[in-house]
Length: 116
Image: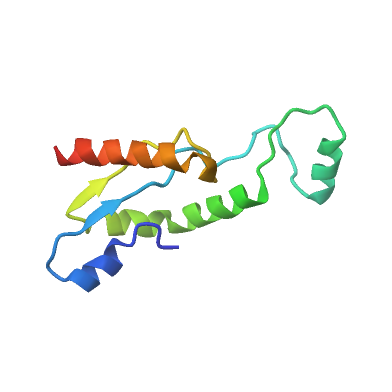
């Protein structure tokens, strides 16, 4: 639940410099507004129907739960950083492991821009 553990690093380095990198997506953590229910039977029904709503996957639900759970703590700990880097990763999926190289390049560019 500590997605930006600045407090943990601050405890470790004491008065040293702490650089925080927040890669949490900046997106609305909502599902399609037209969904009235979301249960196992609804998922099965949608599998065999022509409805086009995109249902979140289980990994997406778990990641979003972690993000929501850590938002308040994250905002508090980010304030403790000496330097905060927030790469623009919102266009990537929550579980974008196949795009790791591209995401790393975006992070590298964001760090360079912030440090210059």
